[in-house]
Length: 433
Image 1 (spheres, rainbow, N blue to C red):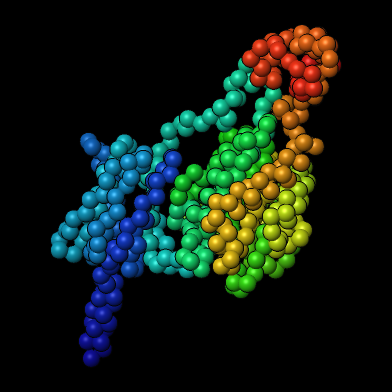
Image 2 (image 1 turned 60 degrees about the horizontal axis):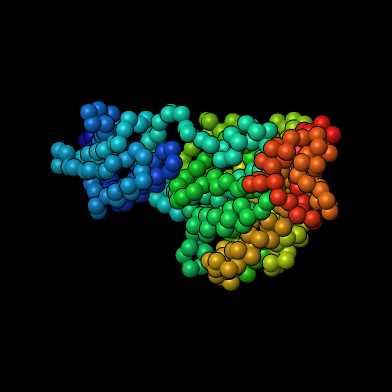
């Protein structure tokens, strides 16, 4: 009797283990330097990878799995993935073939259900090729001619790809709205003399918090600004907020709750905790970070003042919270919660190009004021000014400041030597006077 009971339990257990799994959907997210393929599955799946060459392809065998619908296919802009093929094996297993455009490394992991998705099998394709990164197009010219550079501002649209962020009443996701805001902000900043904005996330794809910071460093950014659209349980809550990093944690319970939800994006994206030493672990602040934080607070205060001219703000003072994306020790960093996407009226405003432009211009007002007073050394905004008086010429002004006429011409972007009374010229600080 005991033997029969044990035998029955073993059979029942094997049936549980062998429960069929269904691939319900496939999503492809193409980033500039990687591709993420997400398989929505009905439960945890036993799988095995094989890498094949001539041509390059990655084969994924999923045991006891079936496909419920046709798979999505990559776009033409995808750098790694050519196409996805599927076939049934042994009448019970599923084989998925990822046809590659070139050799690519891969890593995979499974994710448990969260508030947006169910069980997932995630595959990342990437390579270790040297990136062709140009920090700012004018950098070579600056170095070659000893000319001043632009103040570089890195604009980071929060979330993206597998991490959609908050969801508005109409169904729009935060990741799409903040990318539009970031794009409008880049356009507004690039109209300013002496400023150059660069976009960190340029499309709908996942990017880890660490990578966002490193990207800003590649661009030699003088400021990192992360753009978000807040959400809260109460749809009546509204207004903008500006955050800086808190060394002691969140400045309020609401800020703490918000920081935890934003930091969770790395977990949503499936990055293991093992490689998050300087992002999810405590950061040791040195003197350089203290200086960055002081600059961050000043910039945030000016940006908040600008936003007050566009509409109501949620918090009338700069807030501090433990946002992981702000933990760069060498770059002043702020996070702007542009509005509450969970509020129907504010969601509608965020979808309006006119309102986004107003908001971008208000932020620029704050940036303009800060960099006018505290422009980094060697930038155009840090240059001295000379207002041309009657009888002055480019050559006499050059002689006055002990620089060559050619340097003065290049420094100000002049095509010739013609100047007019009242015109403002920038004088290089490195002239020795």
